Image (cartoon, rainbow, N blue to C red; front, side, top):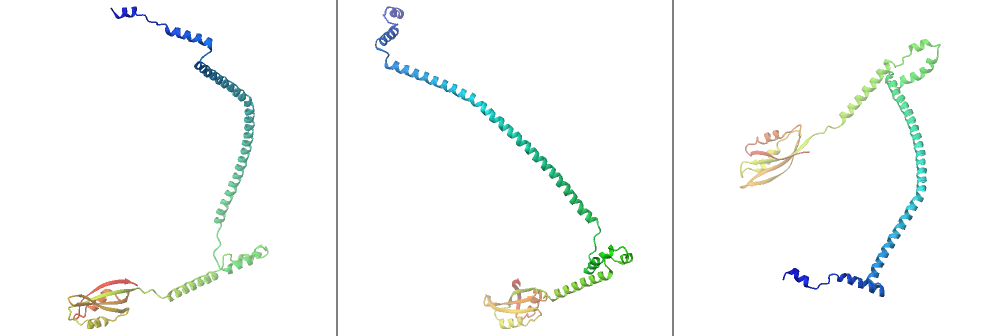
Length: 276
């Protein structure tokens, strides 16, 4: 037996869901809709109500926008008129500023030209107070038309005597300045030198050695303190300080004079040199 024949002989109720649906509807009509159906209907009703409310709100908003559009348009027109008036007033202010600027530029040009004219005029020579007094006193004489001879003899720029007097004053001031400068003491450059004087051996008489060094005298040389510093193997060196004037005494002169005492001194070194 094939599978098709088996299903053909088997009794199967294919339309059972339809009968179940019809039975449910029958009982609903008899007893009313079930709770599930009621919930579904309530949800559908609430959705419909929300849709209706949304439509109503949209209609109200459209009506409100249409009503306020005229007012907004009127306000916009008033603002545009105000802006136009302000623009006109600003244009007027700009024109006034331009006219004032042009006047200022013209005045500046006149002022710039006037110093050039003043500079082109011949400048009066620099004279002392006598010439100035003569010019002031000669002013009424110039205005008198009857004194032509006096005007011809008048020297507007001063006389040679005034120039000579000014030159004398200048020379006197230069001489006084030179005298004051000569009275100031000249700065003398000095140096502080520390010398290391080394003997031949440990038998050298260091007292005699120091006496020989201090016996050197020169203008601008001043000996200072001294001490004996051990070198090694019983030998000591003389460390002595001195102050010299740079223009009068030099280090070469000191070394040359000290090394002349060959019996006591082997060599001389400069341990320190400082400007004072």
